[in-house]
Image 1 (cartoon, one colour):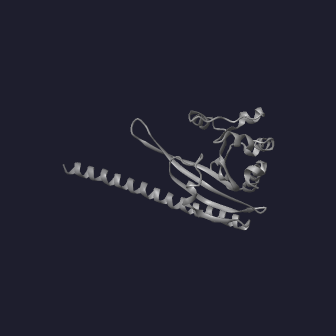
Image 2 (tube, one colour):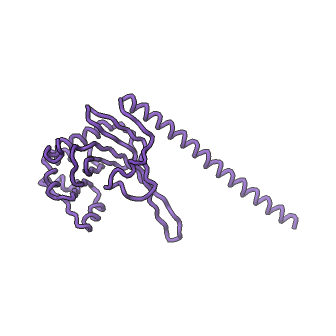
Image 3 (cartoon, one colour):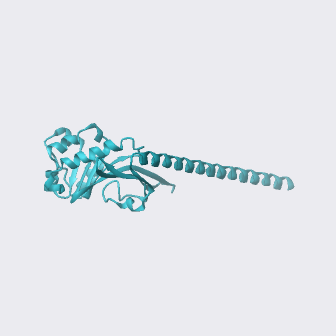
Length: 235
């Protein structure tokens, strides 16, 4: 009997030891990751400040800045690593956006997926009807179920590459000038989405970037801005 108790005690002690080791490793990994995040943010802030831009580690209000994809889905929405300023006198802002979705399998196991996007936007002088440009056919199928139409242009290449929805078809067609269509066929737009919503013009891309392409992205947004007829955009 005493031997059995001794054996159970040893097993209990071993389990306790392993559990403590696992907890210790998790804490250590958390500390390491937190340090890496601080170093990354410090480096990003220094690099952006050197360019004359401003930086903030987070802003909860930006997590609900838009209603269009990729916003409005999931939970635990966060906007971090905000950078803003002006490029050639024209204002912009960019930030990393994340949200979480959850699934449960047949055994009741819950899995959480974190979705990451880089958001970059510029202001518009006047509000426009919401207009979305996406290559995601699943999104367009959802819009189609709601009665939305895919706006077409004369360019077959554009129609194959972009699915365009606008809450006002007449405005949508007016926005789709030949120069805007040509601009959106540039290689830099591959993998990106574009949204006009109110007085904001926004592009998003999956994943968080190091902002090495920030100026080119902002420049591409302002090219679209310039391509929108002046009587629509208000300037």
